[in-house]
Amino acid sequence: MFGVVMRGATPPHLHIILTSRLECRRNTDSLSAWVFWLAAEMSNPATTGWHIEGLAAVGPLPQYREKLMLFGQFVGDWEIYDSRCMKPDGTWAQEKGELYWRWILEGRAVQDVWMFYDESSRTMRPAGTTVRFYDPKIDAWHSLWISPLQNFVKTFVGRKVEDEIVLEGLSPEGPRLKWIFSDIEKDSFRWRSEQSEDEGKSWTMNEEMHIRRHSASTGPSSPFN
Figure 1 (cartoon, rainbow, N blue to C red):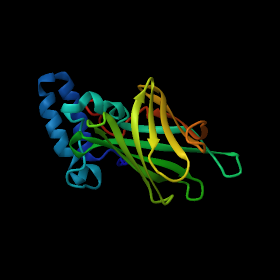
Figure 2 (figure 1 turned 90 degrees about the vertical axis):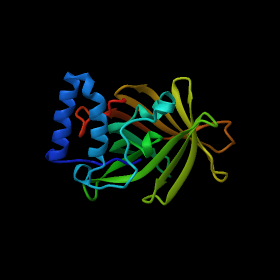
Figure 3 (figure 1 turned 60 degrees about the vertical axis):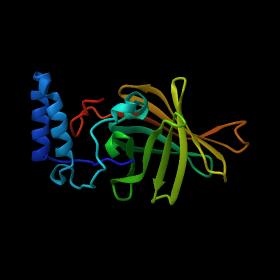
Figure 4 (figure 1 turned 180 degrees about the vertical axis):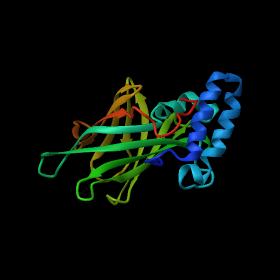
């Protein structure tokens, strides 16, 4: 789950991108040129603040575009405005946070960062990051969640199930786990975690989030969205 968070005044390179985007909308013939220019610009450390060669992408791989949009629809910046997590004593802890999704690796995958407000430091802290990619061999998604803060790594396989996206945990030890995206709209969705102690006969929700897209993006949206 990784995306660059930009705060404060708009950087000069980003201002140029936004201006050029408006010009391209007036002249659709220049859209392709703008996309290639944007790809180069977004790999510029002066734009992003940091750079890893080959990581950033501006849209899905055309070959699997339709399949990739299952998670590609979430690319952008989000607010976790209502979140609760079950504590060991059975009570619920309330949290708020932010969520950032970006295309990576030539548009073959997406990566996101989940952040939560830390009361002690009064800052947003990254809880962890997920890398997800579509595997045509199984017609499903591999998903890897990494949280150094929680000393936790978890692998999932995700598929569309009716109107939901269901990721099932693959760990052979411990309870079975499902992470579910539901109530999916263009600018909002619900996420929840469920676990089973009886091999999937019954499920208990232990975490839930209500998430909405930021009203004003910190950067230009991908033309592929």
